[in-house]
Amino acid sequence: MSHEDGDVVDASLPTSTSSLLLPTASLSLSKTVSSLSRSALSIGNRLSSIHHDSFFVQHLAEHYKLPLVANERCGSWYIPPNNKAGSAYFKSTDGHQGQWSFSTRRLNMQVLEVVGNQGGCIIVDSTRRGKSMPDALSKTVPIWCAVMNRLLFEPDQCRDTGLFTPDAIVSPSEHSQIEARLDRFVEEAKRLHLSLSHLRQLLAKPLRPIFITPSTPLPNLSIKPSDHHLVVCLTVSSSDSSASGSIPAYIQGAADDSESWSHGLTPTLFWAHKDTLLSTSEDELPDVIHSLLETPSSQSHASEGASSPRLIHSTSSVYIAPLSSIAAYSLSFWDAVIICAPINPFGNPHQPNYINSQQESQTRILHLPCPNGKLGSRALRTHLEHVAPFIDSLLRARLALSPSQPRILCTCTTGTDLSVGAALVVLSAFADDEGRLRTVSCGDGIVVDKTYIRRRLAWVTASIPQANPSRETLQAVNVCMMKPK
Image 1 (cartoon, rainbow, N blue to C red):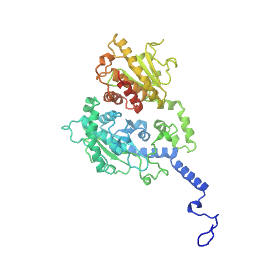
Image 2: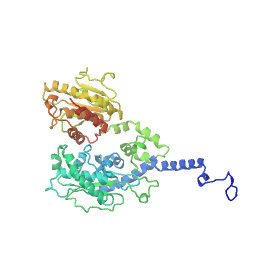
Image 3: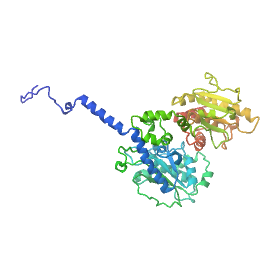
C-alpha cells in the first residue's frame, strides 16, 4: 500500500507493536508464568513454610508462657497437636471494612474457659500476601474482647472495657466507627440470655488483646498482666520475604485455603508424619499423602474428637454428634435418635419416617432423608416439620412413666450442620429456659421468633464450639418454627 508521500510499504511487515509478538509466543509466555506461579505455591513449599513459621509460634508460647489456641481452620497447621490448647472460630468477614460485627453464632465461649483457667492465651492465625495481619485478629477479636468485657464486668468493677486495635493496621477513623457500634453489639449479646455466672467467677480480670507479627519487637509486655488477661493475637506468617531467607520459596499464609492444595492432608496428619512429608519430593507428595490417608492411623486421626456425642449443657439430655458416632454406642442408650442423612442405617432405606421400636431396642428413630452438602439444608426445610410431633409423642409417653428426661441424639454426617438444625427445633419447641423438656402444650403461650431461636443456638455453640450451621439450615429452622400454626 502507499502513503501520501508516495513511499510504498511492504504489506508483509509489522504495522503495530502488538503484531511483533506472535499469538503462540504470547500463549507460551502466559503458560510459563502460570507454571512458575503454581510451582512457587507447591505443596512442598507450603509445608516447608508452615514448618518454618511454627517455630515462631512456639517461641511466642515460651516467651509469654501462655497456651496456644488455633483460629480455625488455618491456625491448626502451625501448632503441633500436643501443644494446642483449643480452637477458636473468629471470622475475618466480621472485621471487614464497614461490616464489623459481633457474631452471635460463634460465641467462642471455649476461649474464655482457656483464658480463665490459664491466665490468657495466644490466638494463632495467618494471612496471605498483601496484608500483615488478618482482619480476624486486627478487628474481630478486639470486638469480641470488648463485648465480652462489658458482658462480664460492671462499669464500677472495670473501667477498661474499651476497644483496643493495632494502630498500624486500624486507622483512628475506622477504630471510632467500630467503637460506636459496641453498645449495639452488647445489647444483641444480652438478648441471648447467656449463662455467665461461671465465667464471671473464672475471669477476675478483663481481656486485653495485644498484636504480634514476626516483625514485632519482643518483649512486648508493657501492659501489666496483673490487671488484664492477655489475649495475644499472633499473625504467624511474615509479610517480609527477606525475613524468611532460610526458606528459598517462602509462602506467606501458606496454610490458608488448605482445601485447594492439601490433597486431603490435615494438620494432625501433617504433624504425625512431618519428617516424611518434608523430605518427599514435590512429584511424589500427592501419592505419599494419598497413602497416608488410607492408613488405619489416619482414619483414627480423622475421627478423633468427633466420635463422641456432645451434650448441650443447658439441657441434661439433648446431644449432637456425627452419624459415625452411633456405632460406638448401644442404640438402647438413646430414647430417640433424629438422623439427618441420606440413609437410615437402622431401617429400610425406602422408609423415611420414624420406627417406634426395633428388635434390639425400644429407641424411637426419626429419619429425615437429607443429602450431604449444600442440598441437605434445602431438603431439611421440607422435613423439619416431622420433628415436633415425633418428640412430642416421645415426651408424652416417657414423662407419663418417669420424670427423668429422655436422652435425644440429633445426628448428621458432620455433626455440625443439619443435626444442629434438628436440635434447634427440639430446643425451641420443647425446652424451657432451664433446659428441661416438656410437651408442646406446656409451652403454649411462648412466642418463638428469631431472637428466641438465637438463644437456643447460643446454648448449642457454647457447648459445641465446632457447631456451624449454615445460613440455609438456620433459615429452615426459622421457617419451621415461625410458620402460622
